[in-house]
Length: 117
Length: 111
Image 1 (cartoon, each protein chain N blue to C red):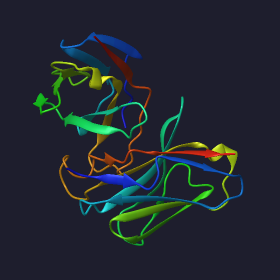
Image 2 (image 1 turned 90 degrees about the vertical axis):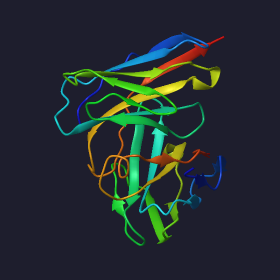
Image 3 (image 1 turned 90 degrees about the horizontal axis):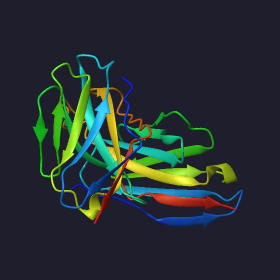
């Protein structure tokens, strides 16, 4: 089974703190994604990565940065946390290849519920 | 990606089949139908996908109408653990790998 793990299930931080959210996948997936999920807004893509050291902005990258130094690990960084970044953060991964069973089947981690006070 | 319409909520008795509908009347010929679900406080989970033929796996069956304007996800014997929000997504293969989830259907399986 594909396994995507996230470093914390629950996290409480203060405004202005630097926050690191870690995601690790064990299936040698090329693609990795960071989403946030808020009530009434659905799932919104923050950043994604197709390869090591490669990153692309998603729909809402402002206030976030990412790092992909190794294929299995994708980190989301909040440089200076703000209260409007309180949310559920979801990491996902997938293969890159042809066919519907590869690129479009994303496997998600359990999520990190971040509260910024 | 084509827009989808799902009922906001449904109930199902434990052990019975749960049939979750999805309308996607603007679907184009190269768009696939995907189903994901999200159990409370967990990440989304892939269930099944298809293009035009009906599909079945260990979790569910997917029935796509001949005109492809709607589909139904079937959980043959729903359990309490199937209580979740179910999302129907229609998208082109390899379309940037970005998933957009709408409101979905909140399925409540009751004893």
